[in-house]
Image 1 (tube, rainbow, N blue to C red):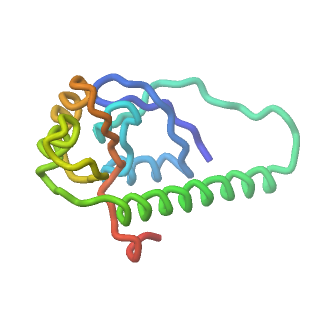
Image 2 (tube, rainbow, N blue to C red):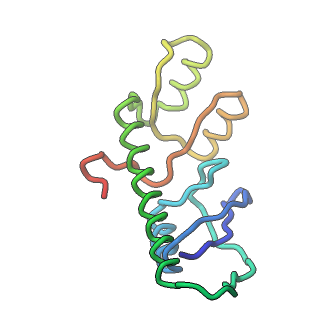
Image 3 (cartoon, rainbow, N blue to C red):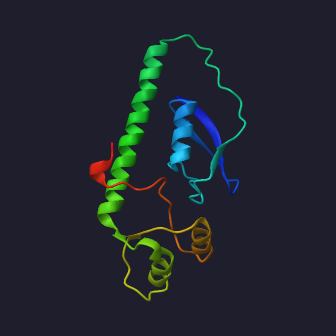
Length: 145
């Protein structure tokens, strides 16, 4: 497992854990990594100091534990996406408009999901409307792995 310092195209810093540099490259290219602050998928690796493990120990056990944590994270992500898909209404590209209508009580309150540009997400947040980006393209539960 490797930890990278990352930043989105809006300069929000965060970190990500990956099995390898190639894993990061594949996920970034697919749009599966999103900024936790603004939801942007324009993510790049930043310069960072390397981590050197100086303690002697069972490297195989350490790697097994890291793989176990990574698998648990994937399972949690799958469960989260399944929950979102089954407990929200998909309003598609109407998301910004419908989020505003709900916020301003012009439409019944309900949980919705859809698509919005980074600019639209920023505008919604500036208005005080809570929105959260889900990294990557949401898949239907039966297609998750």
